[in-house]
Length: 361
Ligand SMILES: [Zn+2]
Ligand SMILES: [Zn+2]
Image (cartoon, rainbow, N blue to C red; front, side):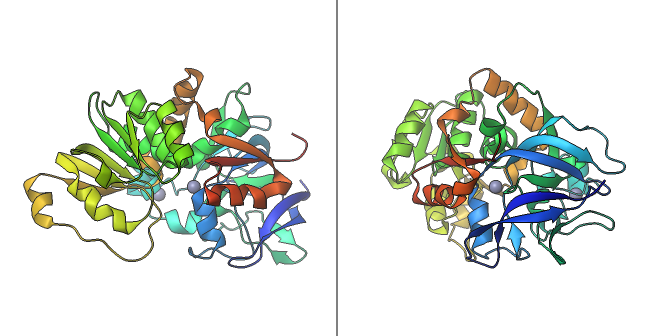
């Protein structure tokens, strides 16, 4: 197979704007699946990476909620064939203890495979002349018309399903929903507070409704997001946790703001759990160890929901088909060429989950 020409949004260095370029993409090598992308969601981590706060290689192609159709597969790839519709998720090694336990979010190679763009010998790349463009972010780099994915991070879906609406399942939605359903295992009637009503928080909310939670409180600064939270099943909303009464069996922090966490830990009920899901800056927060001990409270970190995309994404698709995961209420579509505007809408809070749609789709 020969290389193909692709269009990609390249970030030249930390904080640089997106520049649309035509690049050359090799044929897929071992464990590479070339996917023609139809859509890609925009996730907060894309902004963190663009701004240089994670150790990614520049110039880089971001985008890690890709969805599309398999175009070609490399030697040894099984499980998908050209023409299959797929959602892309994060990358893992498949061989470490966490991967064997179906917890690939805690893969020992999570950082090199998702942020460093490490490739194996013989694998194809994306080229600007002789310069290899850093990529394969989250095993995909999907702000482009094509991406290289891998056997472990493609999830085949039925071709009747909408790729643009379901693209965010592969990161933001599974992170929020997985935290509630798999990590916290929220039980019917339990109480939960969700800090932050972005895509992750609202996905946690929809999952809490699916789990049959009783009291479901959602905290955010944006009135429009709180209105959407009530529409999606929140039993109460507010601008800060201090304004709510009582204690919670579960608290999910999606804000990544350490200053909110001391109060959150104090608002846990006996045997309650605080789940840390946000992208936290360096630093810490103060906890009272005596109250953690005496009340049997827990604090747990969560990557990508603590799920295995291969089993959890099909479960989420079942909820979507049943109308219990109304993702269309979270997303707004943008043309790929309007990627900057889509980022701005996410950063301002105007749009919960922008999804860029690639040309000729
Ligand atoms: Zn692993
Ligand atoms: Zn993400």
